[in-house]
Length: 639
Image (cartoon, rainbow, N blue to C red):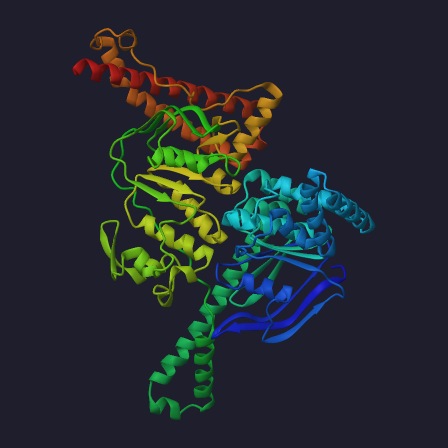
């Protein structure tokens, strides 16, 4: 490693009896991009505060290079201030930031042509030139533009997510020697995350970051350090290498613990044989047993794994939601324009788009929380809906964890059986001493786990999740992925986590600007490939056509509906089996194309499989439309 910029030697820090850092050694050099991983609550943010100098260790030494500049993006949302977004971001530039802030303000005043303002503007321009600040000013404007931040809006008027993006912008423009980023992708859309990746890949200082976004981690990290039970372990290389080495370490640790426990059990058996046995042996063995008992009591066990399940409830109707030429506007601003689609039982749909594009609005239209400006939203039958709200409005911050989950009761019904609140919350990694803590004292990850515990306690055959991945550690995230992959109900998922989308959804609704929503087969990476193909070959979207279900000819003409003919009745009876066979083939093709090895085949085989997937999708859609047409005709004739 090159000459380090900072070094931690034998650093320890504890809060009460809990050791967050236990004799930690760490150093980082310029050009390194180090990802800090670990479970929620292990002390990652505390370690950042120690590195930044915001917290002092109980023991050990911290060495920093002379004139070292450290910038730290914390998880906490900044407090209210009357400063504008531009002014807050510019504070990261020191004296130059103050000059640029005043220049930005006086520019607006000078638009009226007042002599004093024009003179002050000229003086500020000269000072900026003396500080060689025009290039830096352009950097501020670029960061604001890339993060889509309103330069002249007061920070006090911004949402929590926007405020955090403002603090990220302030951190980035300061160009420090060491950049500490704690969950920088939270509240960013995919376009902003992609830009941030590119920005950090060209960053020349040292980067240390915490993230749950595995795609972001894989693209950036040159080394991974893990904080686990107060100890820090370093893993050179990428994330996949870390996963392999971690599994090996846990296996070695488990074997060593088992060997120790076996030896301890032998000593315990010996001591239980009584006074006669002890007299025939030296007292040193008794002292050794006492020492082993103390060592066993002090041994920190690996933190448990979250364990939870979803009750899919009763089976819903085949058609879950039918959107018919739906539009929604805020005044002259069109959010959704003439969008039609069918959501069928078992669909797992990702909803993707820039911040503010209308993703949450679409969910609210589907859930009936908003009415469309035009068009119609028809809900299916026997629906039991669970809704994970990204703002966690279902949680009362003033109440305790127990009160939020069970209204203060000790028992809760889960999947048809009674469970004690403590045992149920333990599955979501809440220790017993936390269940009577107020929710406002919980971390972001803990609040997300509590909300998951709350909505998973009720049966639901339709799961609506709006940004569920923020603040979750990677292990819990992967467990949630596996859970949703096996979920038998219908899933609507809003997320900016590319890996999570690719591992969970089977189709994607993409907000493409101007109120237009496109519908595509597969996850985010599939959409990216389709987009490239569209640019090169003008390939159209591959999923269900956005059109209203076809009505029978007689109904469109206003004539009396006729009964189904013999052949039509036979066709209607055969359609469910045909649809089931096509769905099974579609699922097999999806599974094949989701395997990374699929794209290592010859190009003609890849093309043939993708063409077959497209053909099956079109045939399936035709069957859906024909099935609905015949069903409607049969129902109309029987009225």
